[in-house]
Image (cartoon, rainbow, N blue to C red; front, side, top):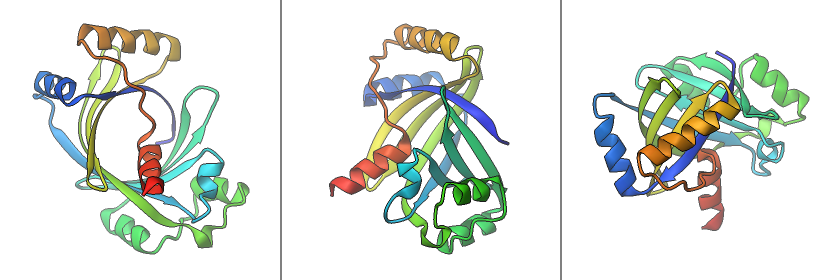
Length: 189
């Protein structure tokens, strides 16, 4: 489903993560792996977009995130697990809105490939204030912890997010997007 994503996030310390993980222990953990796609010049990134394939236990999807004035518009293409695994090995973007946007952005689709991945163990639950995701992320042997709140109203969502952090004694720590963290790490080494 295509939609506008407005979310607030913070990195968490190990202690903050453990406290929230305990509080939300009734919410099942779902493991998902993101495979990030671009070419060696990072032409998709240069246009402030990101392309990924996300694999869940029984399904998968390709997602193109395109920045908006507020949030990102997500274009999603459902994939079977078999289709996703084939795409990861031999990328051929199916005819879709995603392909049209990339072609219109003058991205040479013959040059794109998977350049990195990140696995998340996520507890996700709908709260009155929005969709809360508690994430433990692993990439390139590194682990980090993150809290995300996806909302429909940017101003109210920011207030609700800040209130949630205060109520749970969480110190806000700026969190780049997952794709940006993987990119930053890989380009340091």
